[in-house]
Image (cartoon, rainbow, N blue to C red; front, side):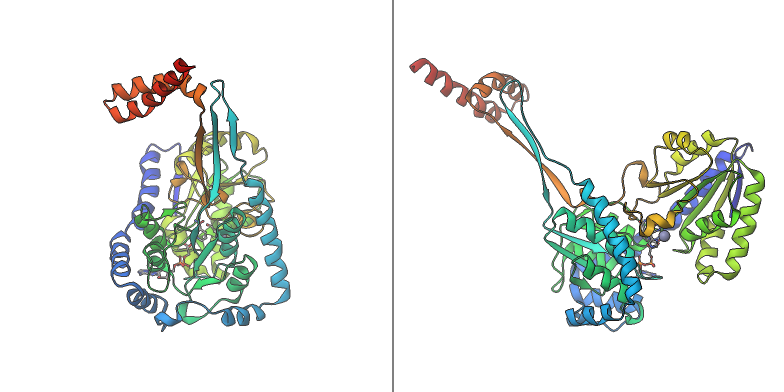
Length: 437
Ligand SMILES: NC(=O)c1ccc[n+]([C@@H]2O[C@H](COP(=O)([O-])OP(=O)(O)OC[C@H]3O[C@@H](n4cnc5c(N)ncnc54)[C@H](O)[C@@H]3O)[C@@H](O)[C@H]2O)c1
Ligand SMILES: N[C@H](CO)Cc1c[nH]c[nH+]1
Ligand SMILES: [Zn+2]
């Protein structure tokens, strides 16, 4: 963990180093990912099974890639009813929020009498990546699948790794709750390749979405163009802005909640209060004594964690805009001014009673969010990842007469004669018809 202080002369260098070191760690996997993608593209199911068996310690053959309806039913029957109730709380809140996002189309007639519009249509097919290497993520099934369903996508395929061959019952229950039944027991870059390029067993999709580790994130980056993707939702991150009025243990746990996801996760505390910084640092050390996933969390905290002392909260907000973190927590007395000043963050959690974990499960907004500073230009998963726009123009004779001549001039200026003529022949026909009457 790095201790930084904005009043020190070496702050800028150290701060840049903090971000760059982590970026280079996550980028290191590009070579292996390229090889995996090429192998699956060339050899289909055979390569898909080879990588799956190597990385997930399984014994999968092409005929067993797809999880059967019986396996889904049997797994769902194992889930405790109270857990199904919690799943339902999460699912219905996620569903309501995403239904509220669905946009209206656009249609109006302008002053030239031209009808202009834009309509939304759902994608035909999407591939959902649900992570599952170091932990199972039933919540990510809901976050991926519910927006796709709400948007009206017809075919939803899902890939999830099954380390050591173990199916996670709650993952399958979440899939059933979301209406997803085409599920494959594969993960990592090879799963992304299969969904993007297709294999004999897995038909290709139009867009691959969902979070995952550095291999999954890099694979999505590399298949972009062959298919659409959502954002680069890689190893988790949080920035917590905290003042002196917090329970240091609560803040420490917020930092460790992201650190426990992945050794490549990043947790940063920004505070103007030196005493709070010291208390949180001690609390992190104490919690790491007992957390079951301490090994992962400690690696993440030691390698990528930081505590930054700032002069004031304006400076904290400006640092957040440089980091553009996946998650931002505002654990401060008066969050409104910082909330307004922050422009780059995947999701913001406002107030001491709104820890990030609420957003992971039951808040309603999506927890599949951009990482590695891509929140500067991209957003979390939403219904907009499953629909697309088509614009339309409808013009009758009088409208063509009004706006057509300008098109003819511009086409001639571009040296595109067929363009110009396609308009002018119609204008001439209209003139002819007009002269005849
Ligand atoms: N940004 C978000 O919105 C968001 C949301 C949820 C989870 N996450 C992140 O998802 C990730 C889940 O990671 P995970 O590892 O538990 O599951 P995962 O499913 O993302 O990755 C597991 C797969 O990684 C591949 N893999 C592992 N080691 C490999 C190697 N050496 N070479 C090639 N491939 C290898 C394997 O194929 C394995 O099946 C975490 O980083 C977590 O922070 C992000
Ligand atoms: N914090 C993760 C997003 O980075 C999402 C998640 C799922 N389960 C728990 N957490
Ligand atoms: Zn989380």
